[in-house]
Image (cartoon, rainbow, N blue to C red):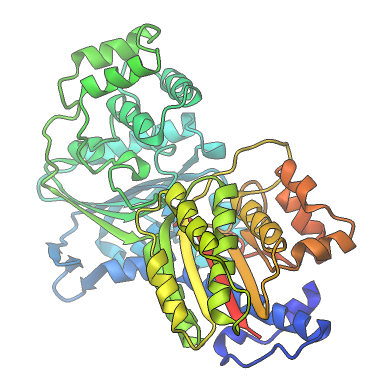
Length: 523
């Protein structure tokens, strides 16, 4: 099946046509066609947030006047442009910026994940690499997404560049997910190890990401607006690629160019809550004691322009346009899909049953209880932007196949020591759930993929499934429940039908969380 999938025509560029003629062979061919469409749609989703297109949408340079335009603001360039960056997608962002800005760029420093240049070169992604004689210095660090000495050296080089700027200068800051680990600069006398130990203790006692970020910012020279403060009085333009639900700029990479709104009292309250105040290292107590209500000075960052240039919402909007061009009635359900993958999978499976009842000829359909259960599951997931009611109303009047889109970052509660990632686990759970109910004369496909191209410690971006997955797996001697119990989704998909259901894109050079694609089409 894998070989057959590879030789399918590029159906994403072709009009939809009725493929379900009945019988297992026709059903198989049609499923493969849907899978190819889903893969193409996923590629369109990622393509909308690649560094090159994003930078060119955000920036424009008038070569004659030397005016750099960012949204509705203009900046005069006269050998006064500097660049810093940190994050998993920043290498490609810096390459795109260098291509656009050319000789106007005086100097730059970026902090990127260890091994990323070799990985991009190996993948043949030359557009993600800097020029041979680039003016941008590259530091690689934060192996396994953990702050380390290499990342600390990069952070100090970034701070040094920022502190040397004047009121005539412009600092372009490139930020993406993973930037927090790539910009560790504890306030002395706190050491990197002490800061990491405190963060791990808080996480182990149940502190949430907002609480962790509050402590990180209070102990950091550069987070929580510290980088913007270091660059003052230079003008600062921060271009941000969001990998956080809701795109809160103060959370992405711990907000280096966004003024912190938290006080030392907030930090002490968090430390008291988790019983850690008495056990603080002397260095941490020293930093907190000498800090005033705002450890980074003035509350405002009036010299800073922060711009979100890429997000999950932007990516899904492109997927919606592409799906509609294919003849689907397409809707974005949510860009904030989060919560445990078990609950998310149950939500998608019940959604398929409810939507399917609207698309198929009169029959048993779904009960009022199932409709209510769907809304209860949605409420449990607490998705602030969920368009469930609107989607169901649109489906009721649709005379075409349906494509429902969502994005976000569900979580996996680890129970076993298998190999997988949240996208492959979600897809496998959705496939298992779909197989429990008869769905009537409708064909369904669900795909979940990470936009960075890497799902967990695997080479796959995600996977796709159809309702027949569990029964087909059984014929191959594969028990879905056993693989799920061990969080071993990648092993399952590698074995199932020769790996044909895995989504392989290679590293993409971007990251706006995950994308979920759900196709429903009457036969």
